Length: 308
Ligand SMILES: [Zn+2]
Ligand SMILES: [Zn+2]
Image 1: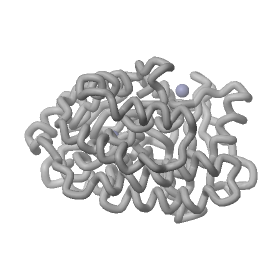
Image 2 (image 1 turned 180 degrees about the horizontal axis):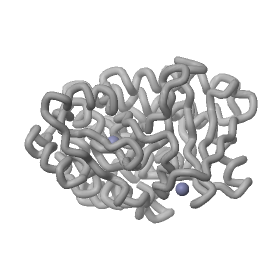
Image 3 (image 1 turned 135 degrees about the vertical axis):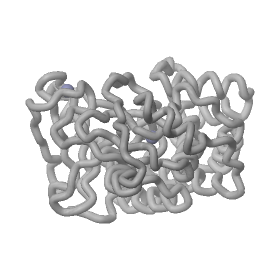
Image 4 (image 1 turned 120 degrees about the vertical axis):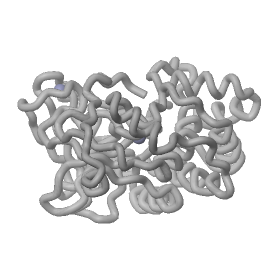
């Protein structure tokens, strides 16, 4: 994962009676049983007539493979409410993905995904990476996952991370779906990392007309509330700019920060309720090219684009 300052994670102490309401307002857990299917359905629509149709079709198959990998997959240990509360008290994510001791079930998910993808058409680099995966051992998978999570994947291994990411998303989204989040209460305005897993936001997402811009985790798919004027890269407020992608009816926008010159992609579901953060982000890569050409830097890349 890309380096985003970790110091802008913070939590508050909340009176127990207020916790449920506060969390309900500020944090939305993923639903892995539906999420990967909805994502693949959205990608299928976006791929029609798209300039990157072959890649998006590959992603359709990968999301379907993620969904299939869920069936009867063990979950492994998850932190109990006390551990989550302790992490929250210390201003840490509930399950810090960089430090969490992963259960081997994530590698089972990787094997299942790799097997499902065997006959799927895919870019040459992805095919070569998939062939490698069939031959590598657990230690290699764990090492590459660790490197990915701290943002240290060497160029030669970037295509492999597409499959590693897919398996880690399955694993961490299931944890995010079941942990007791009552102790997680973000301070709007100071949270730029996922309060559940600590990963960087993939994009901002607006769920309702006039609604707030929430942040969508790139790893576990938790959605959490962050102050609308907070830069998710440097934590600064002020100096914000807004840009809209051409021809998207305002569905795809970017929020820019004049201080650090980074941008956050915004997916506005109030303009199209079929929009899905990861799918719509992948299908609007052209907009990223335009922003980068104009001198902006993305806060966190879509992990599925690390393969180049
Ligand atoms: Zn997360
Ligand atoms: Zn900034």
